[in-house]
Length: 120
Image (cartoon, rainbow, N blue to C red):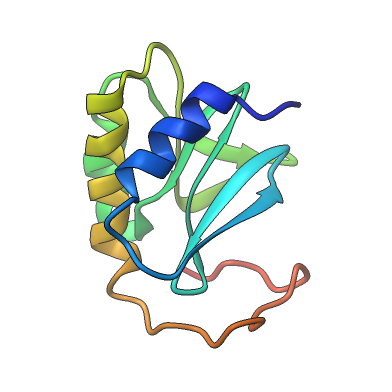
């Protein structure tokens, strides 16, 4: 897998107004972490957004959206978006993801572990 630099740039632009955003290599691409929580990732496989279980049905009803499957297991609350993604659609997906992620309590810098599984 590889980082889709054009998609990563669109995600950066969509998150430009957010403070406390970090970029981390993850999921075979580049993850974007907001207040200590992964909000999105970009790779050559498309855009991954964390919408939470409450927003999952709404997200999956949108064109190009698919359940996130990792190692044969569906990851609840995460949606993979494939197909043509322009700046406007990326912004829309990031707004949806931020609605959920911004409800989570901020983690302290360095908090979390690669071994810890997402529970939301």
